[in-house]
Length: 358
Image (cartoon, rainbow, N blue to C red; front, side):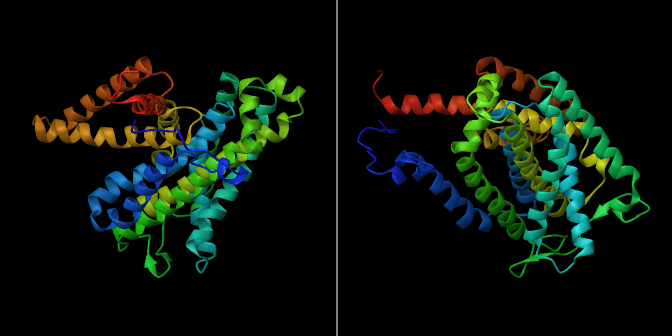
C-alpha cells in the first residue's frame, strides 16, 4: 500500500499529461533532485567527484542518447564512442577558436555539430537495419577515430596529438582545469543531465517519440499509417547524436581535461555505453541511469572490496573485476532480460500490495 495509486484522479488534460502522473513518483524524483543539488555538493571531495559522480553523470547522458536511438527507435548503433569524440573535438575547436564563448553554449553547439554528423551516418539506416546497420555504425566509429588521429587540424597540429581543455567559467565558477572545484564540476554535469533527462522524457511521450516506437515495432505498418521512415529514423539519429555529443564534450572538458582519441573514444567506449543501455533497460529513460550506475560504480565497489577487504594485489584484482563484471552482466540478463528498469517496475507492483500478499 506504500505505492498506492487509487484515488489519484485527473480532471484536466494538463494534469493527465504531466511527466509524473503518480504522486509518489513525483515526490521521489523531486526528493532525489533536491538531495543531489542541496546536500551532495557539500559532502563530496575530489575522489567522489572524479571516480564516481562525474563518470556516472556523463555516461547517463550518453546512455540516454543511445537509448533514444536503440531502445525507442530500434536502430542498433556501435558508433557511440566516435560520436562522443565528435563532441569532444568540437568543444576543443570552439574553445580555441572562440575563447570568449560561454561554456554552456560551447557544449550545446558541440551537441548540434554531432547531431549533423549523426544525420550523415544515419543515412544507411534508410536501407539496412539490424546487424547490417550495426556494422555500418561500427565503420563510422573506426572512421571518426582515424580522422581525429590523422588530420592535424582537429588537434591544432599538436606534436603529441592530444587535446587539452583551457580554463572555462560558468556564472563566475571555474568548471574546467585542475583548479576547478569538485562541486562546480559536479553541479554543471548534474544540471545538463537533469534538464535533458526531463526533455527526453517529454520527447518520447510526444508524437515524435511515438513515431520512433512505431518504427521500432513494425516499420512497414508504421509507414502504411503515414509515418515517414526517412524523417523518423534520421530524427532519432540526430537527437541521439546530440545527447552523445554533449556527453563527449563534458567527458573531455570537465571529466578528463585532456584526451587522445584512440584511448578515450575507442570501440570499448561504444560497447560500454551499449551494455549500459541493455542492462538498464531498452526503451526507458530510467534504464539509462540504472545501467550507468551499475557499470560505472560496480567496478569501483569490486576493486575496493578485493584490494581492501581481501588484500588482493591491484593487478590481480583488475582481472577478477573484469571476470566478476562479465558474470554479473550475464546473471542480470538471465534473471531479467528487460533490464534493471523492469526490476524497478516489479518492485513498485509489490509495493502497491505490501504488506498484503495479494
